[in-house]
Structure formats: C-alpha cells, structure tokens
Amino acid sequence: LVGYTNVGKSTLLNALAGATVLVADQPFATLDPTTRRMALPGGGALLVSDTVGFINKLPPALIAAFRATLEELNDADLLVHVVDVGHPNLHERMIVVRETLASLDLASRESLIVFNKTDTLRGAEGDALREALAAEFPAAVFVSAQTGEGVEALRERLAATAASRWTKVDVTVPYNEGGLLQRVRERGSLRNTEYSEAGIRIEADVPADLAAELTASARANRAQI
Image (tube, rainbow, N blue to C red):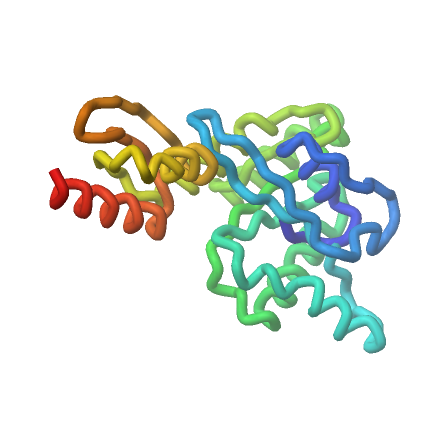
C-alpha cells in the first residue's frame, strides 16, 4: 500500500487483513513497513504491506530514513496506490506519489489506484466527483476502509491479480513430500486433492517457484513408480 500521508492506508490494511495497525490522523504515523497476511477465498494468502505516507517537499533530514522504509517496495508484485477521494488536492497528491515512485525506479511497476474514504462524499457533488474519477481512472476501485464499502471488491481484485501471475498445476507427489501440500495451502489456491497408491494428487494455482518444485517432485515420483 502506497500513497500520500494520511489517506487511510493503515485503516485499509486493517480492513483487508484483519490486522491491528496504529491508525492516527497525523503525518508519519506509520514509520516502519507493517506486513500482514490477507486470506484468499480459495485458500492461500497475499502479503500486504503498509508503508510510510508520502509527502510533498520532504525535509532533507528525513529523506534517507524515508527511502529506507520503502526498500521493500522493490519486492512488491503490485503497488496499491491509496488516494483520499475527498481531498481537494487529490490530483496534486497523486502526482507527488508518482514522482516519488519514479525516484525509486518504480514508475513502471504494476499498480492499482484505490480511492479511499468514499464515506466522506456527500450528495450530488460527491456523486459527480465519483463519476468523474471513475471515468478518468476506469480501473480504479472505490472503497471506504472505515465502513467496509468496496473492501470485498478490492479483495477480489487483488485475488484476481495474484491468480493471473500463478501457474496451474496438476501433479502427483510422493507421500514423503506431503509438506508440499501444506505449502500449496499457504501460498496458493488449492482446487482439489486425491490420495492413491501413487501419491498425493494436487490440483492448484501456485506461484511459479512453487510450481517448479511440485513439477520436479512429481517427475521424480514417476521415475520411482
């Protein structure tokens, strides 16, 4: 989760992962990255990290510490850009975030815009703003981390993004490598298991590195049968 300071990233992490992260209405409430597991509907989980809020014209004395807290963004598969939908300068703040990401060589990293705090939008003016932003950013997700509106839709979007990066496997591994099944449950989405004399058949969607391990185990298992 990335975004300008005080846009509700910590509250959103709490809503997504059931975490308990400090929520404060002040800049730099989150100074260290906080990572939590978000369970997926079909099993497995995503790791979601809350990061320090960006700010325009950061004081020079804080720049080094600020960048150090963002090092783990280099390992992120997806940057979720959280925006305070009701802030009058939201476009300017979005530019600050994009420029900061560019300075970290992350401008080309896949990202998803999430407009948070939809509960602050009121009446016809709020509806008009939401419609305008939806037209400008058609792939964006609108949520209220405070009330829960749209959070499930965001979970589904994140799950779909993860699934698009995973590999489908249908393999039979030996019983002495049954620990692989637990790793599938932890890291992927398990669709089916069958137990036979040949071993444990696993049908699942998993990250590429785990798919390679499963395939190698299945290949060795076939050679022994």
